[in-house]
Length: 325
Image (cartoon, rainbow, N blue to C red; front, side):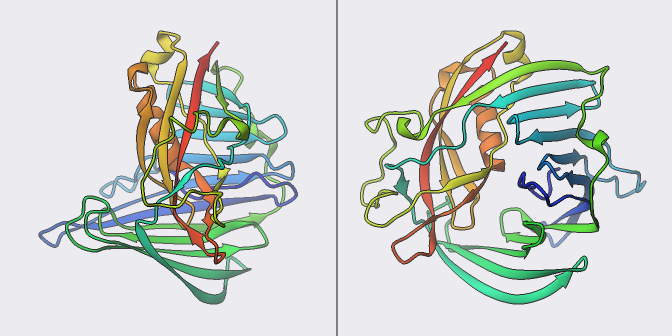
């Protein structure tokens, strides 16, 4: 499971253990708890390492199995996804930064409020807490009554990451990501290297530039009558700050399938991508459309702002192009 998202910022090196926990209550009152951890790092060059491990077995307490490692080098814009179980590496280059669309549309489904929780100290560092409450009216998410999601972040300005995130969502329970065993200083260089005996598969995702209106023409962009457009009348546009590249499925890789998928995503006021759907590219097949959705769901954004300067939710179309060598 994924944990803390680490921005590729130079001269702020660290290593840390990131603990993840989800607690979900079933209709009969039973609580289901899952736990795991990742070992993450960032070096002075801004290179990042994010692990993904399986949930721990609550009966045996055995170490969680490492299933995936994401390594990113901002200098070359190269991302390597390492799969230790099959000794394979998928290496790709992000061709362009996430674009800003002047004609994206705002979607204010949630009534959002922010609360300053003040200052505290975690892992020996000063942090500041913010609680974001999103309330969705009946029907906004297929819900038959009002639904409230609460996200609490405790952010370290010294490292530019959250040291604690707690998200309470009635659909998924309580999800907690906590940074522990933090060590500031240069990590081992081996953490950012790929094992020599692993098979390397090269992949490329080309994202469109800002002038391409997220890769589709304004006539093709999804419309929501009655809502203001981002970039118009004082409404801003979101900026992606962590954009993992969609991965090829095994079938698509075997078929050497190339093509594009256009997805529509709602970027919430706290910078998450939700309500993701395919606008164009269903016909591509072999799972690439769903791969694009899974990747975008992990993206994190600097949210758009409204005329009053406060974060607002917007819906944006994005074209992602799969090319395999």
